[in-house]
Length: 329
Image 1: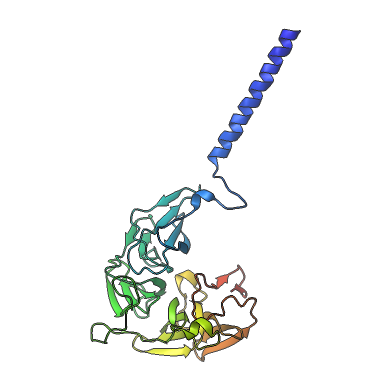
Image 2: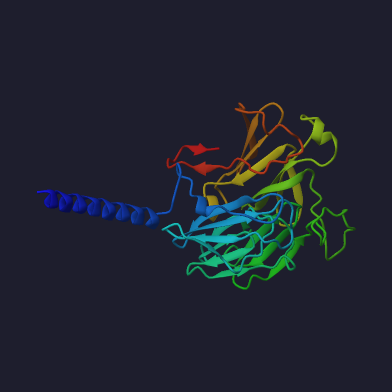
């Protein structure tokens, strides 16, 4: 009887150990997460700030770029490829910088994110910052050759048109950073290097449609912008392929339309939306193809963005929430 009990107890302990091992093995197979946070997906760089510049689902992967605080040149920031089973791959093509742009070019089946072009087979090409300097902040469909070219805009008013096949670029307006990544004094205009000379600072949004490319920035340079929250700051501007025009002198960030990351399907008629603010309220801009810009005031939920300097590392986006008549801002 005693021997039988010992055998039974031994079998129970053995079964418990096996179950425990299987449970631990199962835990090891699935990534650890705490309330939806996956520590193994944390991202780092060697600069004083590491942020997420853009996240896009493309080619059965999630693509993520990080940014350093003010580097229109190469850094150790990465382009990450995240698989459906949450494996994080650091792409060897990474060249860093301070990028926040993203656009899917339907005709060539490529995702443009930061300085990278990623095709449907997940092949990655990078445009060197030595060729196309600046803190890339937005992409837009080309006004006259959208099948083969796209626009790049930078936070310091650099604008380029890029061939989606060869990645060769043409500089439209010079980026105002110097080689070391500091804001340079505005150089003299020349036939080869012209400046957009827009008011405001810290470029944010870029989009196109209705015959114009729309650009926004959300700040102002100078000491007054650091202390006086209602000083004049920011801009919403548009370019018709030849000249710039200021649509409104306020702080603006997101510029998009019904086409979102792909660009508007009917660029001649689809609206363009822009989100901004001043010391009084949120400002929603809507560009109509026949009447131009209309602006609407909405109540603020917070005063955290009131600074005229525009030093906001994140900015509100406009996204579809699954219905034909509603958007989230």
